[in-house]
Length: 231
Image (cartoon, rainbow, N blue to C red):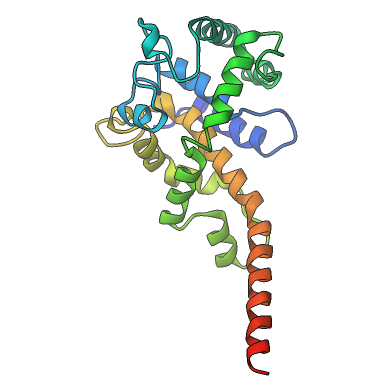
């Protein structure tokens, strides 16, 4: 049964990510996951396969450190995590995380190290948004599918659709260790995982118009070529 606190938290996520106010990023969502279930998702086999981080963020041996992170950088990152967790409110955590600057230019070094490291990998190497977008499509709830179905140019709110995909997303990117006995994503992981899902939704919504423009240009080019052949 969903608690009042969970409902309020989810509502907060949807509102923040759809407004102009600072909101969680994949990097800060991963910090939330780390504290939601200690060490998550880096202790999940499926996530380890995706990220190539097989010994957690703070392994005993230096040769097991996450790719392209030094021991000093990991120490700074964990210090940032602790500062983040110590903040009282969700808004304070979002604001603290949103002040991240590039590696070497952040007043909280670990925040810069972490944000830079995650941003370089999240979409390009780990392809998390792409994985989530494929799940949307497989369920028929990709924003582009929905806009075509309802014949509207503006995608509807994600609030009605993301809960449909959340357990499948958890299974796909975290694996069975993140699921309960009913094969649902563990309660502690649902809120931060929802942030990742919402981020993917936002990016897919933003790509609808450019994708349509590209398709239209390709269609026009094909028609021009065909008309030239018929002369």
